[in-house]
Image 1 (cartoon, rainbow, N blue to C red):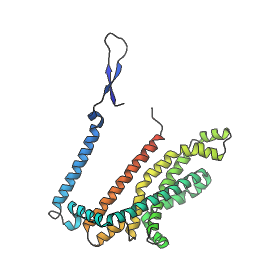
Image 2: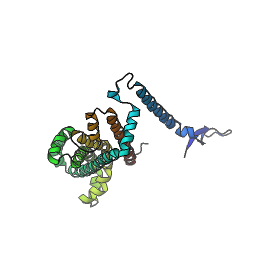
Image 3: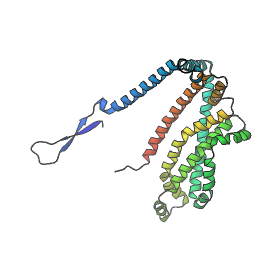
Image 4: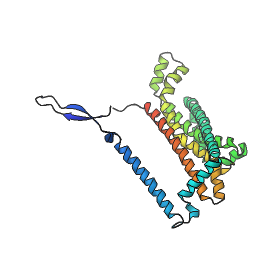
Length: 282
């Protein structure tokens, strides 16, 4: 209920103050958010206006282009279909890579973390592989899978896998052993323990891994396209840079920023889901 509590002490009574619900105004409920968004919009407009004025006056336009040229390039690419073709390819690589890496990471995390000895043996090797910069894997993936979509999908999946695996494994290993013992005392087998205790209790770790991994799926796919590709937004960046087309580079970065913003919305939804599994602090 959108109300605020006021304190009123009724006359002629010895009881303590009585809290009365006072309706909140629209500005009290949304004023701060409206102010923040207004300031954000003002900042963006100011930066774009300064950029437009500075280009080719104070700074060589070859290096920074200008917003009007970037908009013109976006309109040109949208009109001839270039923008939609390459954006769709990159989005597919992100989605497929995320789904593959997340599924493999969650499954491996549940299985290996449930086998304590196996997990302890493999832990240093997993951390060593996780520490390798994923861009260093790109040349090897090119040798194995070529420069097609499969290479970018697998590179994105490799990036996502370790994030989901490590968070899932941490969630499984943090499960209260008392709950596990209680289920076993009631006659539960390994399947009952996994389904009734381990999976629900470790879900926060799983969802946290998914939340963290979503932006990295974009990073993995674009890195693969930048290293070697003939399609996708990474290819557009390389192609524009090779022609000294700064407006084209910035236009592609704008599209990547929009995709990243959409992914952040998904992250926000997952974050709300994660918070549902957290205990409420008194």
